[in-house]
Image (cartoon, rainbow, N blue to C red; front, side, top):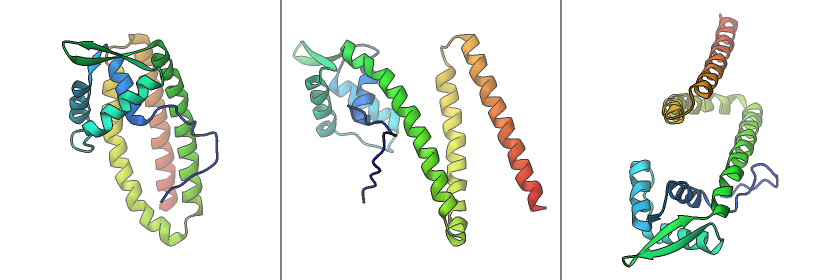
Length: 179
């Protein structure tokens, strides 16, 4: 089943999610294909098993689009990101912002329109999402706050704390209505 909504959000990216992951690896410096494949497998810890038949065509496509170049050293092809490739990171940030905004609105509309019976079943999904959000938040905060400027780190963490306290206040008010 394919869901297609003719909208500018989320913005269409000129590269696939896999290609973006490859570009992010190459942003650290030149790498060879198998090295990137192994890194992907390690990072996704069994939730996704990228194959050579997927990774190498993705690299070739990036090269055709001018986002990477290939250099052969000791009979091994090393891939290197181009300036055009690094410019995609700004586009990716805009894409993610648009995708998040659209996804939040889409889910809000779906939940609003659910029948009473379907909302009861959706509560189980919400419970699963809550536990995944906790894991994701812990993982993201740890990753994002490593090696960044202290002032920026403090500002971001303070904002997250304020948002969390606001959420807790809203939850308390919803619980009071139940009593």
